[in-house]
Image (cartoon, rainbow, N blue to C red; front, side, top):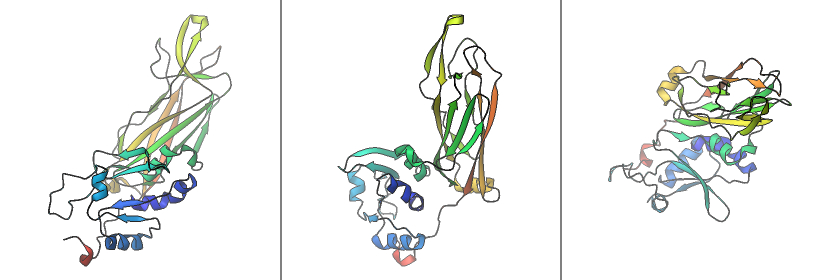
Amino acid sequence: QLVELQDQRAGFERQGLNVAAVSYDTPEIMRDFATRKNITYPLLSDPDSQMIRDFGILNESMKKGTPFYGVPHPGTYIVNPRGIVTKKFFENDYRERYSSGTILWQTSPQAVREGWQEAETNHLKLRWRASDPKARGGNRTALRVEVTLKPKMHVYAPGVQSGYIPVQWTLPANEVGKSTEPVWPQAKIQNLKAIREKAPVYEKQFTVERDVTFAQQKPLEAIAKDGKVNIESSFKYQACDHKVCYPPVTIPLKWEFAFEPHDSTRVPADLRRK
């Protein structure tokens, strides 16, 4: 993730957020890594894991007396100018973690202006984007779909009753990774006077999000074709106006990521922890 932070550093700084990383590695190890990977933001050494303990994130599963004892549970904190943690991003499995792009997006959604794909029908405009251009094993990336309905149109929200067709964002299970369920916004309750019913609907504009955690590096690399990893899904809706409900429409959605393996290069033997 240190390399990802370098990739996303400019985006964080545009939002007024400086970037730094803390590790239990020695200054010599961190200097070697920063030089090799061209890391230009501060890498802070906590060789006795004192700061790691102060934050309560020491990985106690590591055996004492081994070179790995002292590592933290990997995670990210967002800290305001007063030193108060405003957000944190941690996963239970150290092999899985929020990508830097996802953290930037969830912290400052306005930072994401480019890279959208678009589609338009008679009833709405759709655009979709991922928080990251690259797929790395175990990374958790965010997918977002934004819907802008045309005037006088509405669609039915999930959970609608009485046989109405709700909006659906389908992402079939696949080897690329595992996905969360879509997070739908709160719907408006519309009073359908003509049939004396009420139903949850979306009008004007709404956004749906879900996360995908990529498979680990080796299986993900086996899936990648020509250095690319694809996620395919579909968005289905039935639009209505105040008089007519139109036939359902399904829009295919596709995300393409450049596969990038994690760095597995070890530091020189004379710098390693004994």
